[in-house]
Length: 504
Ligand SMILES: [Fe+2]
Image (cartoon, rainbow, N blue to C red; front, top):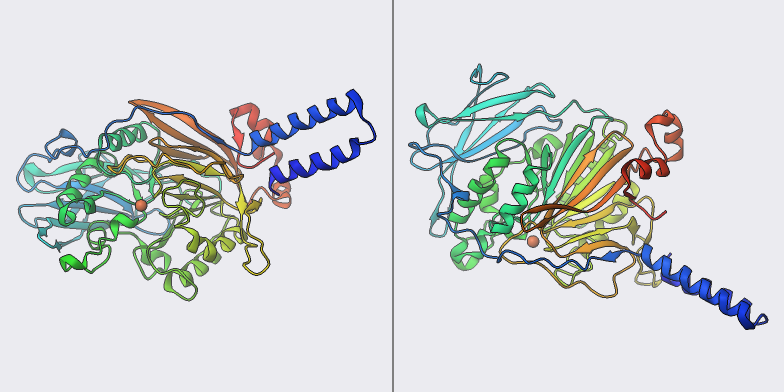
C-alpha cells in the first residue's frame, strides 16, 4: 500500500474520531499523528544530497598509460576472460594481436611457470566502415577443477604474456562468493576511478550490465576506441571473468555507413557461453556460479511473447534450482524501475512482459545500467497493472526483486543528475554519483550488498543492506534450516548494522 495514502487515511480516521474531544487532548493527538506520518515518509526512501566535484566527462587520451600496449612483436593485448560453461568449470580467454594472426593457443596449469595443458582456440576479425580490427582470438579451456588457481600463457616467444584466474567453488547452496557490478563504464578518468576502486573491493567476478566502450560516440563508431577500452579493462578482466550484458552502445546500427549488422563489434570481441544454457543467441543466456544462478537479458533484442528470448527465459526460469543455487540474479541494461528523468520508462515494455515471472520465481535482485546514476528500489511490483480496471501503482511485494540501477561507471556522457520529485515510494535510495556495487553471498540465506561511490579518488561505501534470500526466507524452508543458519532480522542488524532489503 502507498504509505503516504495509508498515512493520510489513518490521519483522517483519527481526526474524525477526535471531533467530540476538542481542546488540548485533540491537539496533542494531532501532533502525534503528524510525527507518525513523518516517520513513514522517512521509510519511503531518500535522495542523497551529496554533490561531488567530478572529473570532466572526457575520454582519456589514446597515448595515456591507461591504454598501454605491451611491448614485443605481435604481443597479445586486450586480454579478457569470461565463464565458458554453465557451472564455472570452463573459461573463455580472448585477446587481440595486431601484426599477424599468430597462435590461438592457451597454455595453462595449476603451477606458476609450469604450463602442462594446452587448448586451441580460433581467430576472427571484422571491419566497420573504415576500421579494420586486429586478429581477435578466442580459446575455450574446459574441464577445470573448481576452486583452483590456474595460470595461463598466451602469445609466442619473448612476446608471450602470463596471467592467472581462480575458478569458483562447486555449485552448492552455501558457497560464499563475491560479485562486483559495474555498468556504463566508458573510458574517462571517472571510468578508471571506478575500475581501480572495484579492483580493491574483493570482487571475484564482475557482472557487467551493458554499455562498454562508447566507441559509437566517435566518428564512424571508431573501432580504435574498442581497442583502447580492451586495454583499459585488461588489468581486471584478464584475471577474473567479466559476465557480459549488452547495452544500447553495443548495437552500432549505422545504415548510413553501410553497417547494418547489430552488435557487430561486441559479437566479434566478446563471447558468452550461451549454448550451455540452451539459448539461441549470445545476447541472452545464463550461468551458474557458486550459489548464484545469473540470468542475462538483452534489452535491445525482441522479448515480447513468442520471441526466442521470451521462450528461452520461460524455460530457463523453470531450470533454476534454488536448492542448489539459492540466489537468483537477473542482469539487463535498461532498468524496469527508474525515477531519473534520463531514460524514463525505457524499461517499461520489458517490465510488462517479464515482471510477473520475476515475482513468480522470486528473483532476488535485478541489476541494470543505462541511467548514469545510482538507484535502489524496495521490493515492489506492478503486476496488477490493468488499463481497463485502473490498477496502476507499484505496491510493496515481498515476492518481488529489489531493482538496482548501477549505470554510474563513469562514461563520457556524464551523470544523469535530475531525479523526479517527489521521490516515488518504491525508490529506496538514489544518488547521481559514479561508483560500483559489490554483492557478497554469505550462504543460502543472506548476502551483504554495498554501493561504493567514487569520491575523487576515495572509496566510499554509500548504500548498503542485508539481503534475505527470497527462496530460503519462506517460513517452511526456514523451519527446515537450523536456527543458526538463518539469523533473525534483529541479529543481522546487530551484526552488520545495515538496513534490510524490505520495509520492516
Ligand atoms: Fe545505455
